[in-house]
Length: 388
Ligand SMILES: [Zn+2]
Ligand SMILES: [Zn+2]
Image (cartoon, rainbow, N blue to C red; front, side):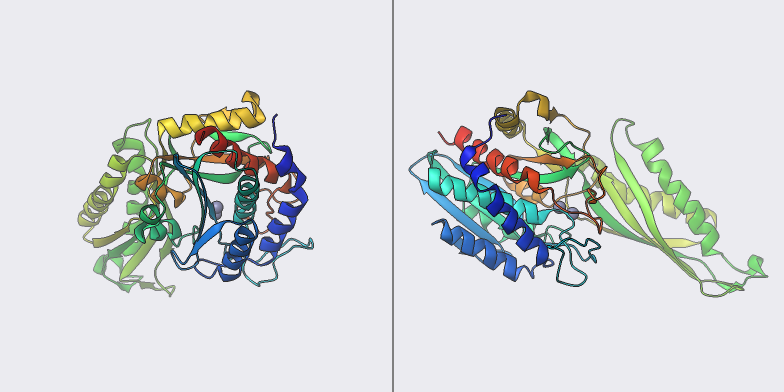
């Protein structure tokens, strides 16, 4: 392990930043205090800043002579969740919590900025991108649409997420898809309501919906390639409000996860065909509203090699897991990767065996401060390797 001594020297300071951000979580596009905090720190390090992309986004820039340009990204937002921890830095904002470790991401990127502003052991330009609203608000997409890469052109862009189930300080790195596309749907089944004791006079949408529910599961098992991945989860079924009335309709809602764009494209028509077929057979009808969400997070090959090299240089080959099983969760860094080649890696924070809640999005979660200097040093190594 070849950590950067200067960064280790301000481990305590990064811990203070991280816990301060943890105490003051803010939701999508409301990250005003966090955005101020980041801007103040960057200014303190002598870094030029730009504010206002996607409302609360901040971009810090260090130019050091001519050369290539690299983008490093962290996310600022918290989750709408009541924190159940009891430590001193517990959230003071009711119903809001940094349960995904974006507080840690922000602190690590600030740590890298502090070190790089001081050492300037590179030639070229580094843009530190702090984006709002990763948790469902498409803050990354909005920054791109508002001209992130026109205002701050980069040759490549890199992201990092803390990861549970991976040993603390280990990296998970993979080219191609690492996180899934996440879409949602509303499926309405129309039947004919009536007396529950006289079902022959009705078209019972609840019976129809139960057949549709199981038929939808045959899409992944029977109509896409067995090696390809697809999850269709019906997460809500709503209908009826009496013991003795067959309702008119059923509303079903859920999420669809895919990796390949061509598979994703086929899903709405496959869902509609199978739902309509079942409904027709039973005298009912249906409508499907399919809503595209975040695309899959797809790492480019060259930049994945660059990330892997930086991680291996830093922590050694035995702590870098190449080609981990990708996750069916999603990530809006995907939009930056659609606009620019790059790589998104996982930094392990532990196996989740401890009491302190190592599970992302859990009310007992807390970022593991031990990995702060490792994450910051990974960013610094990436820059120093790339911009020579
Ligand atoms: Zn999250
Ligand atoms: Zn997250």
